[in-house]
Length: 172
Ligand code: AMP
Image (tube, rainbow, N blue to C red; front, side, top):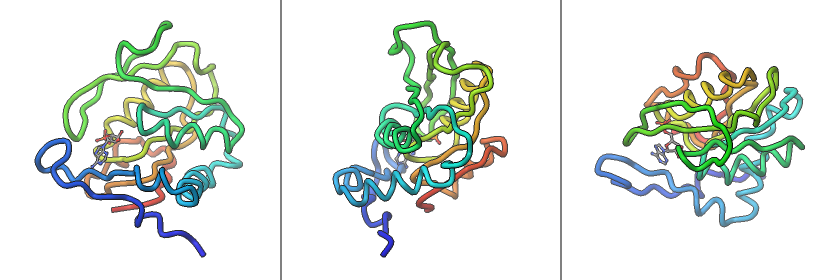
């Protein structure tokens, strides 16, 4: 029987600031069968999509992106907050559901023409993933798709992904 993954997501009202309903995935991560099912579900539509690399956004994106890359048998590329990566980087700025930030990726992480699957835990306004797509394009690679565990549909983040194939496991 399929696992109801939404049961393992904990809602925390007013975190990290008033008005935000935070979707906490730590209960899902701590339950082996749910974690495995979540990662399988995120990877599934992209098994035969010719993906060369998986890129994910720190920190929660890594928890899902690294196992997805291992499942697909491809390399993993970390997208990090500014100032964390030691080598030459591309940079993209974005607005969060709460706050503002920029992300970076190593300039040699992707090759021109690489097909990249982007992973994050939550798609909210889409600003973060849109910025990650910008990094992929700056490196001359292409976005094969975007896979998220949770989509907050009311925020319409998918509208900012420029028509890239989006796969969502849990939708609120
Ligand atoms: P956005 O750029 O608005 O799509 O925000 C997505 C990023 O912020 C993801 O990396 C999420 O981890 C985090 N995030 C935004 N909203 C929430 C939320 N309600 N619950 C948990 N994480 C969130």
